[in-house]
Image 1 (tube, rainbow, N blue to C red):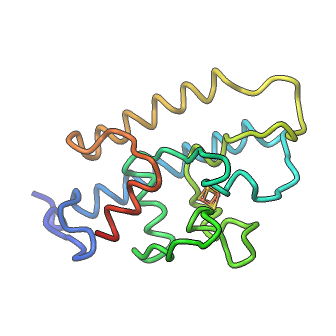
Image 2: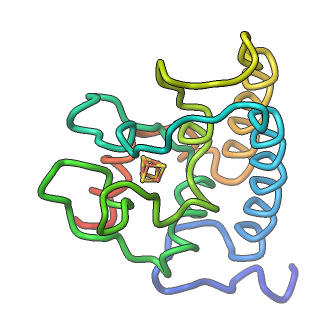
Length: 159
Ligand code: SF4
């Protein structure tokens, strides 16, 4: 047994040992870099409208490593719900993501009609990265490997 096999953070009890979480987050960051590189030729007006989840009636679905990356960014806290129904991770202006560097895979690939860039999105590459993300989640926590909507992850913290 490695020295830190039993190393656990009280905020994340019930999760895999912290050294495995760290390794999963490193792999996740590498995966996110590939997604960002694939979408680098694209841009949008950055209105934040896609983060108004109650308006769009869509929300990102996250695997456990993605949720842990968000919690790493916020120190394990979830901002309070927004009155406008937007994602709780929006900043006070309601236009900018407060966890941008750690935002989920779905937020890196969510496109609206106003996107500008090449005619064709890198669909096959994103499908391959999505499969890698699932494998990563399964390797970290086989019993908690299914993706869940952002609101469900938030509810798990707030219960
Ligand atoms: S995590 Fe960030 S990018 Fe994703 S919906 Fe929330 S505010 Fe928008």
